[in-house]
Amino acid sequence: MWNNDEERAESFLDEESEGLCSLSATQRLYASAACLLSGLVLMFLSLVVFAIPIKFALLFTFGNVLAVGSTAFLMGPEQQLRMMFDSARVYATAVYIGCVVLALICALLIQSKVLTLLAIICEICALVWYCLSYIPFARRIVSNLMIRFCDTEL
Image 1: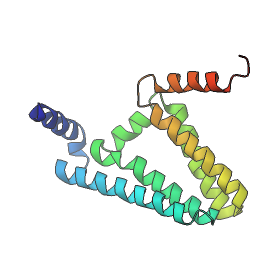
Image 2 (image 1 turned 45 degrees about the vertical axis):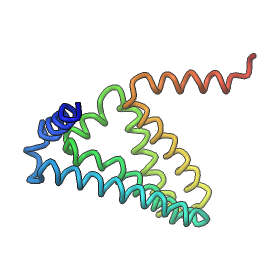
Image 3 (image 1 turned 90 degrees about the vertical axis):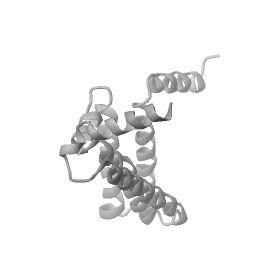
Image 4 (image 1 turned 135 degrees about the vertical axis):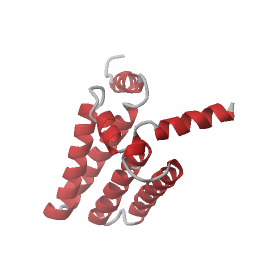
């Protein structure tokens, strides 16, 4: 049973991403794990500076980008972009990228704490919706639950 899973993982790593770089499958796994861990550490550190919304936004946003981008090491950047802009998740991707850019603009250029926090809240919601797009029927289930919980008619 374990051998079949390992073979499937190896074939996934070797499929199209072999020609993208000179990293071996093991090196790509390590790089992906390091990128994901770095992103999670940045997101955790952002909670430490939560009282300073601009620093929080920078750390949290860069942590998000690193965590989402970590899968590019596994499948390659071309396949990652192809999956991100697939018809099933193109809108979720566009909203997520827009929220990331908006959070950075609010934090770096406008330097408004209120706008930065609003942009981060939008970024979190967009990231959750984007992640749900990879789970079959997850967005439909969450949408139905939100309608049920937020419906004012009983």
